[in-house]
Image 1 (cartoon, helix red, strand yellow):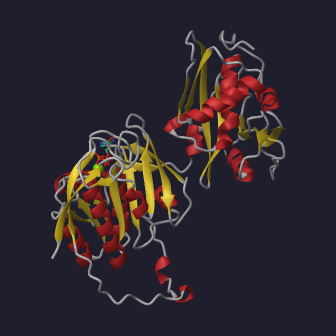
Image 2 (cartoon, protein in one colour; image 1 turned 180 degrees about the horizontal axis):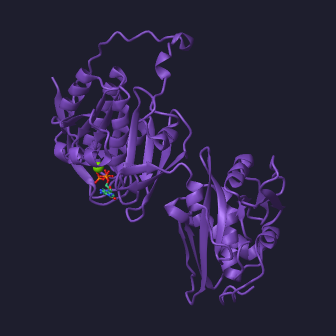
Image 3 (cartoon, rainbow, N blue to C red; image 1 turned 90 degrees about the horizontal axis):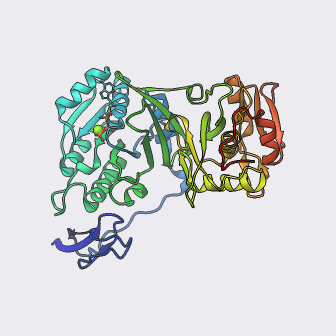
Length: 457
Ligand SMILES: Nc1ncnc2c1ncn2[C@@H]1O[C@H](COP(=O)(O)OP(=O)(O)OP(=O)(O)O)[C@@H](O)[C@H]1O
Ligand SMILES: [Mg+2]
């Protein structure tokens, strides 16, 4: 006989408590504990257990991936969808999650694999309207359902190759007392879909909403359950969207896909370097970084502005750059390269809304800031990569060869890189520097504008 127990669960971190508390013992947030009813079966003590298998005897015919028909999505997934896997796609409202997945489902269905869309957010008619705009999604099966039991039963009966749940926050299990979207509901839905997906070999993609700070709403538990977590980023006001993988059990993380939102849906951008890496010759405060995202080298324009301030604590604002990394680069510039920025605000921006997590972009960020501070443009057709050490010395960046190939492809004349970097071909010419000071000498032209006061060198 199932017994119902009352539990209080934090809606932020998922910590549980037997009684209500004003402040969560797990994450110290106030007023986040909500009451939940849990059905609990008594300990059964039965079950004979299964015999473990020898790993070498396990058959692996199932590992074949299949393409989603969207090359940029395949790339981020690590080469296609793995059957029976569970993928979580997170993203802000309106970024284009439903659009991307409907496009993928459409081409999977056209390829002869049954594809099912479970929509809890939009009506069937709304999805139909979108499919008319995108085109090519006629063969996708659609189900408007939010009851978890019904969804699982449909999956077991239909066993499609791919199923998209849009969104996991709308599903609810009626035996849990809490509202859809609450911690317990989301966790229950994901756990049950995981079981159904693995048993029936359905590749399942869950759409998840993100909270204000960018993490997938609901407990972090969800991220541990699934095989792959994808994050769809980019602001609504720009046409470009970035898809990246945060976790992937079947491929590399940090893989990057770039899309452009058009009236006909999301279109992949196979050559983002050409889009994001172009600068105008002679412009002060702009440099090109050769960053590496997963296995993909990408040229990105970095812009910097240095302006005099009367604030006691000058601002260091980075869009697309880690603030700690930016503070470090500013300090190294001041201490080791003679670019004092103590009474100047520093703003740094990465083109196209891309976020750089990789230390290999340090040198280009430093170059852009120094260019802005000295009023001297970066030399024409120059791209830079290399990690900056706290001593002012440059450290070699990973996979220099691939970065140089990307430079060659985009017609970059000179690659400014740490000592010891060698290219296989003549183009681009590698200008190597041992320290940041040498790199600035090699990378910047003579000053054209007066340096902003506060950054006088
Ligand atoms: N006709 C159109 N032309 C260009 N862009 C459009 C058009 N219609 C919709 N869009 C774009 O599609 C986006 C909405 O996409 P979509 O519904 O897939 O987002 P979503 O991430 O699923 O949002 P939600 O979280 O609300 O479900 C809008 O932000 C808009 O930019
Ligand atoms: Mg949607």
